[in-house]
Length: 262
Image (tube, rainbow, N blue to C red; front, top):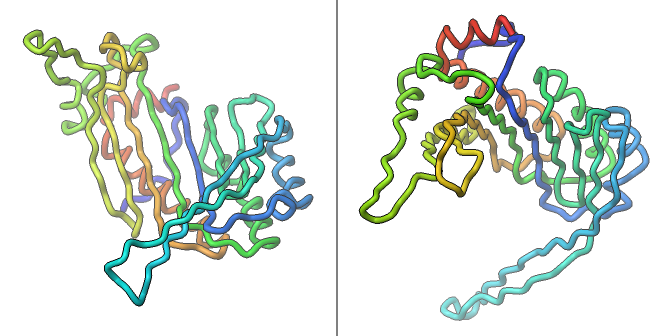
């Protein structure tokens, strides 16, 4: 995999970047919202919104070992928790913390380093205070090219990606109309799954396609269990690097010039 760490663009088409980790355990509210954790979050996301009460369900499946042919006993337990949202001054970038997950959502994105630094220490503090198993770790980049803001051309993209501009036909015979045309390519990279969706996005979905908004959507994640913050941070860096490499393979020098000039 090529190293693109030195590549910096003045302009990008990133609409949203999402980082998320899910916890196996239900972490008690007093522990996940410990003062030290909140102080670190507020140092980056200083505006706190109203708490939300959330019910989390846990499904237990018990097999009868003495009678394998008997159906399993399935029970559901509910635990009441809290979900808190914190935002930056621009209100476009936010962190959401609950008893079962942590989400960082950036709508105004500049660099990976800036985003990562906004939550990296928070993860460290959470693990200092709690014994947690993370069951899923992921990072997602959604790039949307809006034809109302610029003329989108096929030669902005590599050949395979550009072919997605030839959208599926609508059919008058069966009264069918196109509402979206997205291609999915699935990769395994660095022991992570990387799902790459690209094509005609259609922001008016589920209404018929009227605008050729084009999306490059990269979702990189792993379900490997983690118990240490270093494992999570290393995985996020690998996920970002894999996404950046695939993004660079998806675009052309023509688009790079536009992005460099800003």
